[in-house]
Image (cartoon, rainbow, N blue to C red; front, top):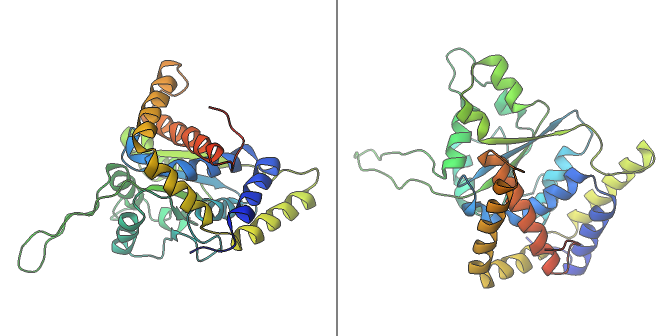
Length: 276
Protein backbone atom coordinates (compact mmCIF):
# COMPACT_ATOMS: atom_id res chain seq x y z
CA UNK A 1 0.00 0.00 0.00
CA UNK A 2 1.39 3.40 -0.97
CA UNK A 3 0.44 6.77 0.51
CA UNK A 4 1.97 10.19 0.09
CA UNK A 5 5.16 10.37 -1.96
CA UNK A 6 8.87 9.80 -1.67
CA UNK A 7 9.46 13.38 -0.56
CA UNK A 8 7.06 13.16 2.38
CA UNK A 9 8.41 9.73 3.32
CA UNK A 10 12.02 10.94 3.17
CA UNK A 11 11.12 13.80 5.50
CA UNK A 12 10.00 11.20 8.05
CA UNK A 13 13.36 9.46 7.80
CA UNK A 14 15.21 12.76 8.19
CA UNK A 15 13.12 13.51 11.29
CA UNK A 16 13.94 10.11 12.81
CA UNK A 17 17.60 10.59 11.94
CA UNK A 18 17.60 13.98 13.70
CA UNK A 19 15.49 13.12 16.75
CA UNK A 20 15.36 9.33 17.04
CA UNK A 21 17.26 7.23 19.56
CA UNK A 22 20.07 4.94 18.42
CA UNK A 23 17.62 2.03 18.53
CA UNK A 24 15.13 3.90 16.33
CA UNK A 25 17.82 4.58 13.73
CA UNK A 26 18.99 0.98 13.88
CA UNK A 27 15.45 -0.30 13.23
CA UNK A 28 15.15 1.94 10.15
CA UNK A 29 18.47 0.67 8.77
CA UNK A 30 17.67 -2.97 9.59
CA UNK A 31 14.28 -2.77 7.90
CA UNK A 32 15.91 -1.34 4.78
CA UNK A 33 18.51 -4.13 4.78
CA UNK A 34 16.21 -7.13 5.21
CA UNK A 35 16.10 -8.13 1.51
CA UNK A 36 19.66 -9.40 2.03
CA UNK A 37 18.68 -11.66 4.96
CA UNK A 38 19.57 -14.72 2.92
CA UNK A 39 23.22 -13.61 3.00
CA UNK A 40 23.33 -13.82 6.81
CA UNK A 41 24.55 -16.55 9.13
CA UNK A 42 20.93 -17.75 9.43
CA UNK A 43 18.39 -17.79 6.61
CA UNK A 44 15.86 -15.70 8.55
CA UNK A 45 16.03 -13.76 11.78
CA UNK A 46 14.14 -12.73 14.92
CA UNK A 47 14.75 -9.37 16.59
CA UNK A 48 12.90 -8.75 19.86
CA UNK A 49 12.42 -5.20 21.18
CA UNK A 50 11.45 -5.49 24.85
CA UNK A 51 10.80 -3.05 27.66
CA UNK A 52 8.17 -1.20 29.63
CA UNK A 53 5.01 0.14 27.94
CA UNK A 54 4.73 3.61 26.38
CA UNK A 55 8.35 3.91 25.27
CA UNK A 56 7.64 3.47 21.56
CA UNK A 57 8.18 -0.24 20.83
CA UNK A 58 5.04 -0.49 18.67
CA UNK A 59 5.99 2.77 16.95
CA UNK A 60 9.31 1.22 15.89
CA UNK A 61 7.50 -1.78 14.40
CA UNK A 62 5.28 0.58 12.43
CA UNK A 63 8.35 2.50 11.26
CA UNK A 64 9.85 -0.77 10.03
CA UNK A 65 6.62 -1.51 8.16
CA UNK A 66 6.24 1.96 6.68
CA UNK A 67 9.33 1.55 4.52
CA UNK A 68 7.72 -1.33 2.64
CA UNK A 69 3.97 -0.95 3.12
CA UNK A 70 1.40 0.62 5.37
CA UNK A 71 2.50 2.92 8.17
CA UNK A 72 -0.89 2.82 9.88
CA UNK A 73 -0.96 1.00 13.18
CA UNK A 74 -3.07 -2.13 12.89
CA UNK A 75 -2.67 -2.26 9.10
CA UNK A 76 1.10 -2.60 9.01
CA UNK A 77 2.95 -5.59 7.65
CA UNK A 78 2.57 -7.73 10.74
CA UNK A 79 1.30 -10.72 12.65
CA UNK A 80 0.20 -11.17 16.25
CA UNK A 81 -0.11 -13.83 18.91
CA UNK A 82 -3.80 -14.19 17.97
CA UNK A 83 -2.94 -15.51 14.50
CA UNK A 84 -2.92 -19.25 13.94
CA UNK A 85 0.35 -21.04 13.34
CA UNK A 86 -0.62 -21.75 9.72
CA UNK A 87 -1.49 -18.09 9.15
CA UNK A 88 1.86 -17.02 10.57
CA UNK A 89 3.77 -19.34 8.28
CA UNK A 90 1.73 -18.12 5.31
CA UNK A 91 2.79 -14.58 6.19
CA UNK A 92 6.44 -15.59 6.51
CA UNK A 93 6.28 -17.08 3.04
CA UNK A 94 4.45 -14.09 1.56
CA UNK A 95 6.77 -11.44 3.01
CA UNK A 96 9.83 -13.58 2.33
CA UNK A 97 12.53 -10.89 2.09
CA UNK A 98 10.88 -7.87 3.70
CA UNK A 99 10.35 -7.49 7.47
CA UNK A 100 7.38 -9.09 9.18
CA UNK A 101 6.46 -7.30 12.41
CA UNK A 102 5.10 -9.14 15.44
CA UNK A 103 3.51 -6.71 17.91
CA UNK A 104 2.99 -7.67 21.56
CA UNK A 105 4.64 -11.06 21.18
CA UNK A 106 4.22 -11.49 24.95
CA UNK A 107 0.91 -13.15 24.10
CA UNK A 108 2.83 -16.00 22.52
CA UNK A 109 5.61 -15.93 25.10
CA UNK A 110 3.08 -16.44 27.89
CA UNK A 111 2.79 -20.15 27.10
CA UNK A 112 6.46 -20.87 26.55
CA UNK A 113 7.54 -24.16 28.08
CA UNK A 114 4.61 -24.57 30.45
CA UNK A 115 4.14 -28.21 31.54
CA UNK A 116 2.55 -30.19 28.74
CA UNK A 117 2.82 -27.31 26.29
CA UNK A 118 4.86 -27.14 23.11
CA UNK A 119 7.82 -24.78 23.34
CA UNK A 120 6.08 -22.34 21.02
CA UNK A 121 8.71 -19.64 20.83
CA UNK A 122 11.56 -22.13 20.56
CA UNK A 123 9.85 -23.84 17.64
CA UNK A 124 9.08 -20.50 16.00
CA UNK A 125 12.70 -19.37 16.34
CA UNK A 126 14.03 -22.55 14.76
CA UNK A 127 11.61 -22.41 11.86
CA UNK A 128 12.14 -18.69 11.14
CA UNK A 129 15.91 -18.98 11.19
CA UNK A 130 15.91 -22.25 9.24
CA UNK A 131 13.73 -20.68 6.56
CA UNK A 132 11.13 -23.43 6.44
CA UNK A 133 7.74 -24.14 7.95
CA UNK A 134 6.14 -27.42 8.95
CA UNK A 135 6.11 -30.44 6.67
CA UNK A 136 2.52 -31.60 6.12
CA UNK A 137 0.65 -34.29 4.21
CA UNK A 138 -2.74 -34.31 2.47
CA UNK A 139 -5.50 -36.72 3.40
CA UNK A 140 -4.35 -39.11 0.70
CA UNK A 141 -0.89 -39.26 2.28
CA UNK A 142 0.88 -37.18 -0.36
CA UNK A 143 3.33 -34.61 0.95
CA UNK A 144 2.54 -30.93 0.64
CA UNK A 145 5.18 -28.45 -0.45
CA UNK A 146 7.17 -27.07 2.49
CA UNK A 147 6.94 -23.32 2.99
CA UNK A 148 10.29 -21.61 2.35
CA UNK A 149 11.27 -18.05 3.26
CA UNK A 150 14.16 -15.79 4.30
CA UNK A 151 12.13 -13.40 6.44
CA UNK A 152 13.32 -11.08 9.20
CA UNK A 153 10.81 -10.89 12.06
CA UNK A 154 10.95 -7.71 14.16
CA UNK A 155 8.92 -8.21 17.33
CA UNK A 156 7.98 -6.31 20.47
CA UNK A 157 7.44 -7.70 23.93
CA UNK A 158 7.12 -6.44 27.49
CA UNK A 159 9.59 -9.05 28.67
CA UNK A 160 12.89 -10.47 27.54
CA UNK A 161 12.48 -13.63 25.51
CA UNK A 162 15.69 -14.98 27.03
CA UNK A 163 14.45 -14.29 30.56
CA UNK A 164 11.13 -16.06 29.99
CA UNK A 165 12.80 -19.09 28.43
CA UNK A 166 15.31 -19.31 31.28
CA UNK A 167 12.70 -18.96 34.04
CA UNK A 168 10.21 -21.43 32.59
CA UNK A 169 12.61 -24.03 31.26
CA UNK A 170 16.22 -24.81 30.54
CA UNK A 171 16.67 -23.37 27.06
CA UNK A 172 19.23 -24.69 24.67
CA UNK A 173 22.06 -22.44 23.56
CA UNK A 174 20.86 -22.93 20.00
CA UNK A 175 17.46 -21.42 20.86
CA UNK A 176 18.91 -18.33 22.54
CA UNK A 177 21.46 -17.75 19.79
CA UNK A 178 18.68 -17.45 17.24
CA UNK A 179 17.14 -14.34 18.79
CA UNK A 180 18.64 -10.86 18.93
CA UNK A 181 17.20 -8.79 21.75
CA UNK A 182 17.28 -5.04 22.32
CA UNK A 183 16.06 -3.57 25.59
CA UNK A 184 14.07 -0.35 25.23
CA UNK A 185 14.68 1.53 28.49
CA UNK A 186 13.96 5.08 27.28
CA UNK A 187 11.61 6.73 24.78
CA UNK A 188 12.58 5.98 21.18
CA UNK A 189 12.51 9.70 20.30
CA UNK A 190 14.86 12.12 22.02
CA UNK A 191 13.97 15.44 23.63
CA UNK A 192 14.70 17.69 26.55
CA UNK A 193 11.50 16.73 28.41
CA UNK A 194 9.05 13.85 28.57
CA UNK A 195 6.48 16.07 26.86
CA UNK A 196 8.83 16.78 23.96
CA UNK A 197 9.69 13.12 23.52
CA UNK A 198 6.02 12.13 23.58
CA UNK A 199 5.17 14.88 21.09
CA UNK A 200 7.84 13.65 18.69
CA UNK A 201 6.61 10.08 18.91
CA UNK A 202 3.08 11.25 18.07
CA UNK A 203 4.39 13.30 15.14
CA UNK A 204 6.27 10.33 13.70
CA UNK A 205 3.23 8.09 14.15
CA UNK A 206 0.99 10.48 12.23
CA UNK A 207 3.56 11.14 9.51
CA UNK A 208 4.29 7.50 8.71
CA UNK A 209 0.57 6.78 8.53
CA UNK A 210 0.35 9.18 5.60
CA UNK A 211 3.56 8.15 3.81
CA UNK A 212 3.78 4.38 3.64
CA UNK A 213 5.19 2.19 0.90
CA UNK A 214 6.73 4.72 -1.47
CA UNK A 215 10.29 4.19 -0.26
CA UNK A 216 9.94 0.43 -0.66
CA UNK A 217 9.60 0.84 -4.43
CA UNK A 218 12.89 2.75 -4.53
CA UNK A 219 14.62 0.18 -2.35
CA UNK A 220 13.30 -2.79 -4.33
CA UNK A 221 14.55 -1.25 -7.56
CA UNK A 222 17.97 -0.64 -6.02
CA UNK A 223 18.26 -4.24 -4.82
CA UNK A 224 17.12 -5.62 -8.16
CA UNK A 225 19.62 -3.54 -10.14
CA UNK A 226 22.59 -4.13 -7.83
CA UNK A 227 22.05 -7.66 -6.52
CA UNK A 228 25.48 -9.12 -7.29
CA UNK A 229 27.38 -6.11 -5.93
CA UNK A 230 25.27 -6.08 -2.76
CA UNK A 231 25.88 -9.79 -2.20
CA UNK A 232 29.63 -9.16 -2.38
CA UNK A 233 29.25 -6.21 -0.04
CA UNK A 234 27.26 -8.29 2.46
CA UNK A 235 29.96 -10.97 2.48
CA UNK A 236 32.65 -8.34 2.99
CA UNK A 237 30.74 -6.80 5.91
CA UNK A 238 30.37 -10.19 7.62
CA UNK A 239 34.10 -10.78 7.20
CA UNK A 240 34.92 -7.35 8.62
CA UNK A 241 32.63 -7.83 11.64
CA UNK A 242 34.14 -11.22 12.44
CA UNK A 243 37.74 -10.30 11.80
CA UNK A 244 37.54 -7.18 13.93
CA UNK A 245 36.02 -9.12 16.81
CA UNK A 246 33.00 -6.80 16.73
CA UNK A 247 30.57 -9.72 16.51
CA UNK A 248 31.38 -13.26 17.58
CA UNK A 249 28.02 -15.02 17.36
CA UNK A 250 26.09 -15.63 14.17
CA UNK A 251 22.92 -13.70 15.01
CA UNK A 252 24.58 -10.37 16.02
CA UNK A 253 26.79 -10.65 12.95
CA UNK A 254 23.77 -11.02 10.68
CA UNK A 255 21.83 -8.17 12.31
CA UNK A 256 24.82 -5.82 12.18
CA UNK A 257 25.48 -6.66 8.52
CA UNK A 258 21.86 -6.02 7.51
CA UNK A 259 21.67 -2.72 9.42
CA UNK A 260 24.94 -1.43 7.95
CA UNK A 261 23.99 -2.49 4.45
CA UNK A 262 20.48 -1.06 4.83
CA UNK A 263 21.90 2.27 5.95
CA UNK A 264 24.22 2.35 2.95
CA UNK A 265 21.39 1.58 0.52
CA UNK A 266 19.21 4.32 2.03
CA UNK A 267 22.13 6.77 1.77
CA UNK A 268 22.78 5.88 -1.86
CA UNK A 269 19.16 6.64 -2.58
CA UNK A 270 19.54 10.03 -0.88
CA UNK A 271 17.28 9.05 2.03
CA UNK A 272 19.77 8.71 4.90
CA UNK A 273 23.11 10.17 6.00
CA UNK A 274 25.70 7.41 6.11
CA UNK A 275 29.01 6.95 4.38
CA UNK A 276 30.36 3.66 3.07
